[in-house]
Image (cartoon, rainbow, N blue to C red; front, top):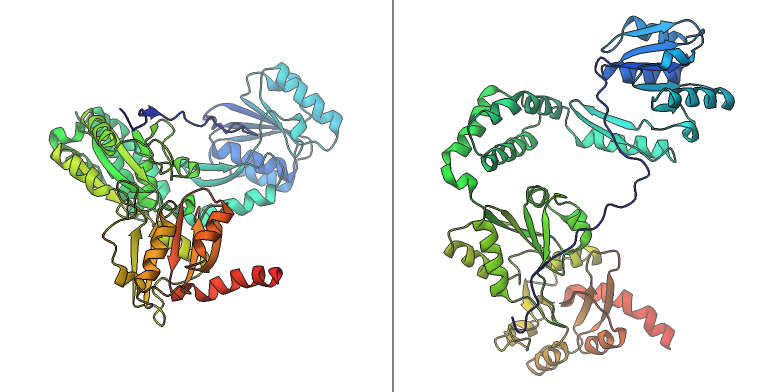
Length: 486
């Protein structure tokens, strides 16, 4: 395909190093041994009992909290043996916990546990431990554990407090319903793809109705929804998703849900890798980006790939920087899907203009400085300055103009705009890599900006905001440099 790159898979990023492997142990009915009787040991005994373990504690001096816990265990039994532990006590245990002040005692217990093939944790002594306990958010059967590898327990507790506030208590009911309904969904006679759609409907409803108690009628409705679309349940689909300008925290909740349900993700060069971290790890990721500085994928090739994947039953996410409906060629992709009979959905995103303005702290439609805002493209499909720019609108002092993709044509655009009436002193700000950690801003008058950008030799996606709304910010950015020069 002359003039285009070959469509290829993007190798997924490898898992970053883990300080600890998070593992959730099934301890129902299994023995758990604790050596020690202080309050820290009592808390571990409560956790183990809540997880269904049969807890055996070996200590000649159990604290009051531990004695009270043994009388009122949260789940399974807690037995206290009023003596020091010995190696035989560890036989057949699934986990062993030690509470020791003395390093030699801790080392001896850890060695005995390992000799018996039992993973061991010594409270507050990570050097002797095979595993660690994290801070827990309990919406059982939904359980979240947070670990800092012992480096900052208070930080982990603060994160847990944040999650406690974010995650409704009602999620416990929905997670429990999922466990109860799994067999019924498998036995519903719906295809594998259909069952996945049932779970997607379940999840969407649970997320938006967290405090509602799940009812059997909800399950019937989820199954009937999928049965109602018949063979379409096995068909693929395409969703155009706006990835925002770069900062992954600007993703919408709907965009995150789409990414986590994808089979294949076709993404642009403008999409930050941090955004891709929100996708299903199992999803196939394919870079199909366009570049103004080298070979690009043909739009027709992208359309064909998207349609073919959907025809093969895949849930395809077309992930675009910013908003797919703003200079994202979404219209062509929507048309290609509809012509092929493929279901298509659009998830809007925060466009780069909004992201850049938010970081600059300026309003694009300040009521005293701008009557309207307009977005224009700096180049046409051939890479040249568009021939149909409304120069009169561009020169209106009460208009905010945002120029997308101006790199190649900025000098020509500015010269023509000034010739057509734009005030050469109009404030303008160029924003490179908007909202990302490496965001750069360059300010000046619109007449000065092409030279300033050229001198800075910036790389990365760039847009330019032009208008009276930029005056205060541009003045603050430019004046220190002017004073230094004088």
